[in-house]
Image 1 (cartoon, helix red, strand yellow):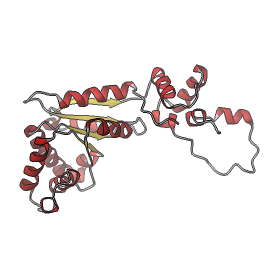
Image 2: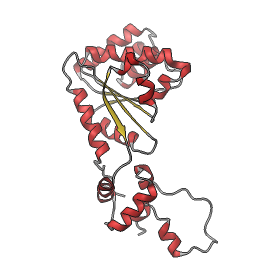
Image 3: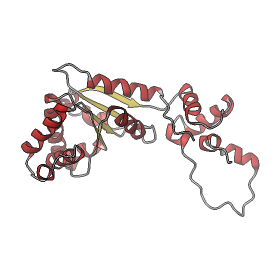
Image 4: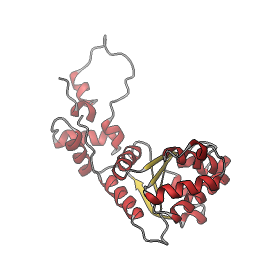
Length: 243
């Protein structure tokens, strides 16, 4: 498989949203949300955009607190240990703002579902307030990344829903995207008929189209019908033919 990145409609929409947040005028909230089911390409696309925008990558953890979040952000910005371990939010906040004022960069936070879990809802609210204080001061937008229920969790909190100005849902790819994906990463050209078959078998899920199937067990001593092999082929088999 070629080391290329396919620009599907999901990718294009997120790219537009991130750059809109980066260029938002003062007074406009600079927070966005990316959500969707597992396997729709969220993490891969975020990694791509982090590379393209020189973004900062954070991962929310179970039990995250505002102080823990700020310390993690300080570490990603390579601020001094004295600042990171100060355990004082004001000191860390001022250092982060000073750094991002000189070099504005978007902040991407994955696994944000932890922020809205029942056991951590208070800390989650305080963390979002800390992030708002940062992007309110400097041109450093924040993109939250979560699973399919993240949008509902945020909308249930009217206080924070109004601060999300970019909502991007990653849905299953369409057939045109499947062709873009195959032509971009494939080592060989595959026919429309075969691509349609792979698309239907994957249920429009980009992750299932590019990952090999899970094997139920060894097949070394089992007779395999060649037709069964063709029926069970995935995009990985087709796009990466044996040498």
